Length: 280
Image 1 (tube, helix red, strand yellow):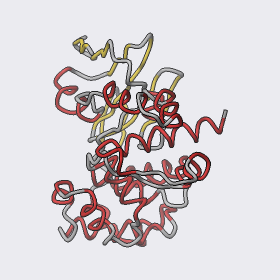
Image 2 (cartoon, helix red, strand yellow):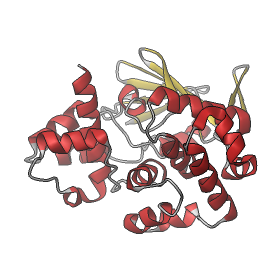
Image 3 (cartoon, helix red, strand yellow):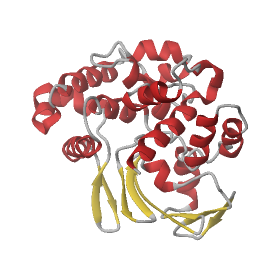
Image 4 (tube, helix red, strand yellow):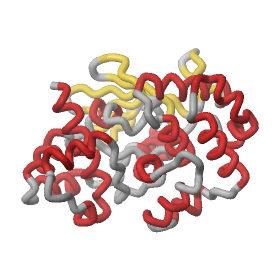
């Protein structure tokens, strides 16, 4: 992989295991949208970012300093996905091998822990367009403004801001039954009862238990938060699509523990493979 400083932008070359369409369209983040066939735009870590991919090269509209301080880690460019992918494609599991080949451009983003937790609380019994609409409404009402290229966007609101807003105000933004869960999470995090920094340092099983002390946070939501927001690649969320994978391809059982620290990446390959293959 080569990183080239273009002064007002940064270009990534010679990286075959990063596809922006796959990475930002696999259900792990809700604040990035495709603006053209080869371009996505979104908000993360209180920054606005556009990524474009053409002939294998990826261009980010940021300075090299911003890339090194924020986006290199966010995009998991410090992780050798070629090695991880080969771990799956060289194994005996033909389904996982095909899934890893199909979704080889997926990278697990390192999102803000609070935003990931709250976003997946919102995702319960919900579809992606509506999840995005709720998150955007919360951000516009309670987030901080971000100016870029003459436009104003909004960061995801802090736990403190949502705790102060209260359940009724959150409900008014069409969050439905999730309002009380968002409010409870915000109050627990803002008060320090739930310490996200401490949770990040715990083994995954213990971290899972801690997050599940929040109302409305079960194993699936907690696992998604850990995988996408707490840098826990061994977390393995099980949703309706993964259950379909198990029933269809693994009637005799699926040993999640056999993948160790790469279990969450295996989950993303299988999830993406089944969901997008079923569409086509």
